[in-house]
Structure formats: structure tokens, C-alpha cells
Length: 590
Image (cartoon, rainbow, N blue to C red; front, side, top):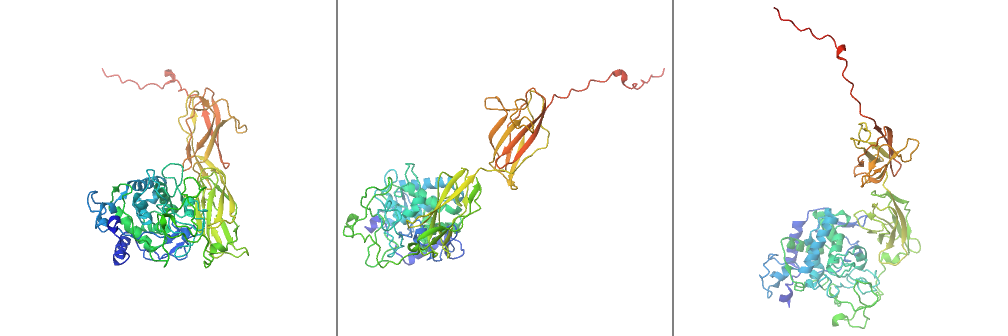
């Protein structure tokens, strides 16, 4: 069996040596430790430093669930598909080095999407492949349908605090079929509370399914690229991997596979991939048989479309597949309460008015306080801030959800909001991760881009002959508080006079798409530098001085003078008789 499914690489000297080599190749020394900053980011330093024990499991993509510890084979990662033997040395064969076709396609498509959406992230598909290998053995060797959905759901063990992180149910069992505790779900092993905001539709079927490799790979890419991390930088790469699963051993294992796949790999048929053998939780709970990823929950009616279905077995029912009976559905009586369990309510912590101009950063940040029923501050509680409503406003980093840990005073400060281009009101909802307590809603408003100053950039007089066209274009620049006001709407009207701002019915005019005369233009916008060049101006047969008035949101105005006058007629030649006497012609001597 071992020969068929791949060589089992046990933890020991060989494992340490291979992992250390990969880390040395990919890492640069930084400040040690893993912390969570005020934007919910995990920061890690040196790859050899231990993860932060204060980081809760629900802060990672996987809830710090178990993972496969098998390391890459020492042979070439890119053998000929016909090379190698599947018996005796399976870890050296083409199957071990290859990636199932649909799974590989999902990774590459996710990379292409992130290259367009977040080019500064520099996400390599090989990183997704490395994580997919460690999390689920490439979707259990590529056992997926044609659209990328796993043939049966892939579930990690329940996170009940017994050898694993303690994460109580956050989805009422909709994703994992467990209404008591959360379990990591799918080929990329997202916990439900993370998938709820990180989930993406990678195959275009209108659903976000953690059991679909296209959806899960794209979600993993976005997750790794949040907070403007640049994965071509070793420091950011380590931060991203540790944010997925907060374990130094996990980091080293992923880096080993990343280095392996970067040297080359190849496509193999779906379902023919080798299965990993060793897991990080082997022997961590004496007397308890861990539920390996791949367990299929029984059917449960009423779950959301596109999500895995299933219901929890009763304590006396056999687990799916004839395994040991399911653990109790109620928390053990000895489980101590977590800080999250003690929260009685959320309160606003003095957030002022949330208003910003489109394209600008909100000056005010949302602050929420977690308290017990008695009003005592609760520290180390994860508060999730979610932007809701018809808006394109995001948090710094481009995401619509941010999770932040409360400080010693029980306060969590959300990342700064970056206003999008869509104006109007929306809301930010603050809630306790892992609890169904009433949250706090914050109203925010995005106003139209504005300018407080509008000036003409040229000084040349704007003149034209009757029936002609102005040779010099009207060019202006808008600013707001001394800075360039980009993408500001500008309206231009040829007015009757400085006192009468109604549209003139004679004089200069613009032309519409059909070539007809128009004297009011709307929908004009300045460029990123606040500059705007108006369309060409023409003149009818009326001579005189005319006014062009420009206005912007925010109250900036500018009046430009236009002159229409006949061309100057050159003066006729003077009377030759009035010319001075010509120079006498010298008469030659006779």
C-alpha cells in the first residue's frame, strides 16, 4: 500500500534537513515572532522562530487544523511521464511529482486572476500547489469532477479544543455539517468563518463552494494577497503562509513543496495522484483517532445550495465509512471558557462621523469595544468588521472584511476605510467571531469627488473669427486643499453674461456626436493629475466677447473669456506720390 500511494516521509533528521534547506533558500532573517497588528495582519519574522501562542485558530484560514507533513522526494520534480516506477519507489515516480490536471488548471487560473486583480502580490501558482499538497494532497490525488468539485467533501477534524484549536460552530453546520464545532472544509481546508468572507467563485457557476478546487484556489489566492503583501519578498511570503496556518513546521513544509514545484512539475490524470501518509496530528491525542481529511458527512437537508450537505451523527451512530463513532455533540464539561465565551455585548468605542470623498481614505476609523454583561473589557477577542451595502468601498488591502483582536481595553480598531467611486451610504457591521451576539452597525457615506480650486493652465488669449473655430483649446486644472483633484466631474456652460448664468443662445459653441451645436457639457472629468482639456470650440457669425463658465462639485468655479472678431484687414499701400524723392540716378559722364 505504501508503495502504491507514495513513500511515507517520517519526521526526523531527513525531514528537518530538507525543510531547513527550503527555508534557507527562500527566507531572509527578519525580526522574530508572530504578532497581530491593528489591521488584523499576522506578522512573522525569522522562519525559524516559533509562532505566537496568542494567535487564535480562527485567525488563520484553516483554524490551524492538522496538515500533511510528507516532504517532496529528493529526485527531480519533473520526470518524463513514462519514467519511474509505481512500485517500490513511488515517491520518485511521475505520479508523486505530478499534479492532477484539473487541480493544476485551477491553480494556474487563480494565478492569472490575481495577476490582473492584484498585480503587486506576485502570487505564484506553485504556492497554491504547495498549500494544496499540504492541506489535502491535491484534493486527494485529484479526485474531482469535471467542474473541479471534490467527489466527496474533504473535512478536517472538529476543532473542539481537544488537541486542536477550539472554534465553536460559526455556520450552523452549513459548510461542514457540524453544528457544534467548526471543521476545515475542502481541498484548501478553509474553516467556515473564514470561507464566509474569503470564498470566491473561481469556475463561474455563480456559487462559492469550498469543495470546488477552482473556488478554493481563487479564495486562497485572495487570502494570501490581502494587506498588499508582495509574495516575491521572503518576509511577506512567510507572513502569508503563517496566516494560513500558524505553525513553523507548516511554514517549512509549504516552503519545501514550493521550492520543489518551482523546479518543475507536470500534469497527470485526475484521480491518479498519490496520497500523503503522515499528518501533523499523528499521536497528539492519545486514545483518540483523528478524523483524517476526506471524511464525508452524512446528508443533511436544508443546507445552502452549492455548499456541502450533511448532518452530525448521533453519539451512538457509526461515523461515515464504518469508522469509530462520532464524538459527543456538546462541549466537554471540562472545557474552560475562552475570552470569546465571556463577551456579553459589543459597544461603539467613540467612533465619529464616517464620511469621505470618493477615492479618498476615511479620516475616522471604526472602534468597537467588547464587554462582559457586567461592563468589563474583554481582551483577545476577534472582532470581524464587514462592509455591507451597495458600495465599492473597501478596507486597506482591498478586502470587504477585516478581523481584528481587541486590546487590553477591549477595543478593536478596524483598518482604515478606502472610499470607492460609488457614492452614497453603506454600513460596516462589527460582530464577535464565533458568537451570535448582536453586533454594532456603523453608517458611512461616500460623497462625490470635489475640487475647491479651478484654474486655467494657459495664458494665451482665446480668439476666433465669426464662423470659424478656436485654435487654442481650453485647458484647466482642479485642486482640492492644494492637491490635484483627479476624476472630478466638471460642467461647462457658455453663459449669457456674468450676471445671467443661463445658457447663451448665440456665440461660441461645442459640437455633439452628431455635429450639432451645444452650449452646455456635463460628464466631463479631470484626469488623475486634476487636468482637463475641453472639446474644441466653434463660433457662429456673431462677433463679440463671450463667457464660458466651468463648475465642479465642491464649489470651484472658473469663468473664461472668449473673443469672436473679424480678422484684421491689412492697410492698403500708401500713395506712391507721397514717397520721398527717390535717390537721383547718377548720369554717366559724357
